[in-house]
Amino acid sequence: MQTRPVPASGSLDFGRGFGFVFQDPDWIKKVLIGGAFALLGILLVGVFFVAGYALRVLQRTARDEPQPLPEWDDLGGIFADGLKVVGLNLAYSLVLALAMGCPLGLLLVVATRLGPDGGEGAAALMMLLGLAMYGLLFILSLALGVYLPAALVRMALLGRFGAGFELAQNVAFIRRNLVNYLLALVIALAASLVSQLGFLLLCVGIFPAAFWSYCVAAWAMAEVARRDPAFQ
Image (cartoon, rainbow, N blue to C red; front, side, top):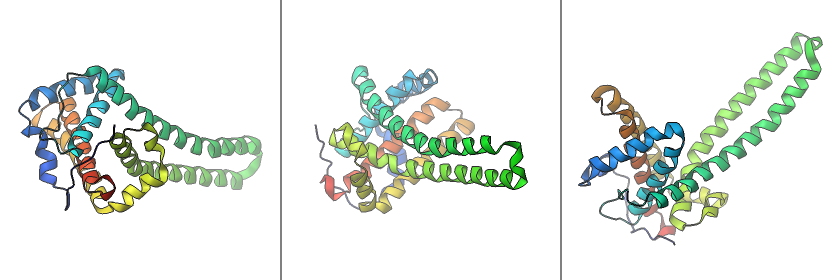
């Protein structure tokens, strides 16, 4: 089912992004439950619930609902939503792994054939190629980290898993909303850093704090979509 975000304008509000969770009357209960699932992420199963909950925060924020935090009363549905999020992430990670694995495998074959008889020049060349591969991996990983939120947003708001793989449309979403999209990434990064500082300085618990940061990141991307003409 396609969601239709309520139109919004202007830049994203950092203060509102960091504080919207605490405006929910039941935020303590919801965050503590989310923190418990974040803890279960150590056993993997909690990852699906946290990811599914964040997806629903994104959808509810995009619809401009007064309380973006959903109740924890549909665990099956939240888990199913989390499967979509994790599946999309794994699919792109697999593509990245294959893209890097083939050249790396070729590099290893060449290194094996050269062996110790290749001399210092061959060894230096292999080292340079290896460094180039690691540099390329870093760049591709960074690009994927910037691109993936757009794929997740379109998948969530259009209600189609395949929308997450529509490369041209996902990139177009980023380009149409470049400034706010970059602001959303900054908000997500800042929330992650704040959650770690909250744990270290205030002892609020690393897992509830991490869960809060996931909700903030979802809110930020939803606010970008609300300002996108394609969703209005």
